[in-house]
Image 1: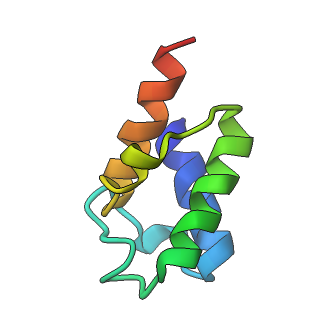
Image 2: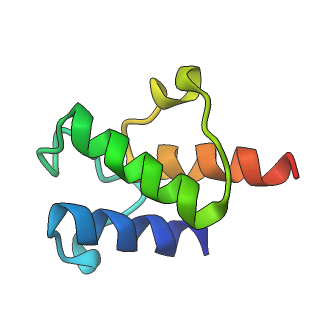
Length: 78
């Protein structure tokens, strides 16, 4: 569920086909996202899952799988 929603968010924001996205996809290197794009992705994910990601966790996000794991970490806290 988290993976599918993150894929949808990235697809919408970066205008990328969802079929191209895997957990190993590097958001910045493979999708040419800049730091503002990454921030928008995370803001959308926070809204979608009603969580607040701490700044130190944002630094650990490089791939879609990283983003999924960070969001799941915050979902597990509830």
